[in-house]
Image (cartoon, each protein chain N blue to C red):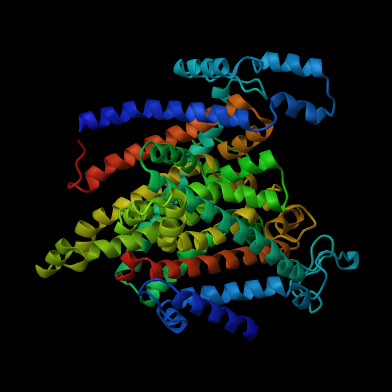
Length: 316
Length: 301
């Protein structure tokens, strides 16, 4: 087991290196660079000046030198400066990561609290009206755009309560109440959608587990239904649900562009889209690596949780 | 409407009868076993009908401005009210179904087809090709679909055809991964060996022998993608990076004035969102039923 963990941790390095090189190349394949984007804004073009600007960012060097330089920086945990704002990338990301991470964690909590009981209930009452209502509720969650849900929430607050949630982000430790009264709404909007995927997975996994031999044995020896579900079925049915939740969590870190827009949040999703549009190579590269790292780490944690949930699983 | 309904029914009947195995069920059986799926199909047919016959159904021209009727609440003249330019919301929603369905079907079809081809080819060749393709797919899968779509839009620019491209790109790896796992099983079938022994080239084996046998996952992915693509188009348009004004598109209708004046004119924010949700909901219901009907593993449950 220890060897397995060590090997997985070591394997992360070549994966991240691969991501780094690929995103580096992808950014260079895309037409246009930061200098062109800047001058396109000012509507004035001077070849000499463009070349000078390119040299300032080091874009005139051969590709492999640029790439090597960047990767060497990564090894020393130095992400460099944002090409657009000139601020250190570590600082640019840190402010937004705090917000995105909190939103992702809260949305996951909402999703888990909704999905596991609803999915289990739907499986236990398969093909009854309860099952149908829960299925419609979760399919509707997949179909409702989170930005529309956000607009409806604001509308509801305005018309019914004459109140709108705070618009400026306050860190949790400074004022938990202020922070939560802003963050709970996007977390609910995102969490509802996210719970739909997990609830559907929970239902089908539960249906499968309930047909296994050991559940029949438990029934045969006269165990109560509630105890069978809680003690025996739930843990096993959780495995695929956990995978889905893990994957979605990784997406929530950088993928909530539209929600961030509606709720006026300054998160990583918007930063990423802006940086691609500005061809801010260094910032895009750092963000892609961050998302890849979260994705890999979450997957790793999910694999480890498997062992705890299902003792039949052993890693060599 | 009944004419449209029965012709679609007949079409479904034929395609199901022409299928290769015993899961064939008539439309009646489909409706009674999967009532939710049938409900989805009815909404989809209604949507297609309103897109095709938009000029006959819509009470007004969707682009016609009428400053006398700015921000009109729902009345007998304007059933769903009007927007900031006095344009009739009902007509814009009816015409908007054209944009949604065009983008939805085009990008779902392109994404699922290219993805299926990539997945089957990856499974057929195996070895280092498979490894490289799958690692590339891994990297793309690590990103939320909307982020990839936004990245493509910010490179290509906005407009209907670019939006279709932007939504297609992130769907390819998704479909490739799912189809590959089915294709790996097909790859082991004796008829693939027989085709190789007969000296057929890889293109012929992939297109004529393997692709037809991964139809079930392909169709499931295709229907799931249509709903997702409609949702994505709405999100992109909402961000101002999708379809451009004055084209009627549901996401675009929720942008700008709809949010600014939401308190005084809530109908502008409510109805287009309802249209998006209902459309995507219908495709999801139908896709779910289709998956249950086509996937033999889940069928017994």
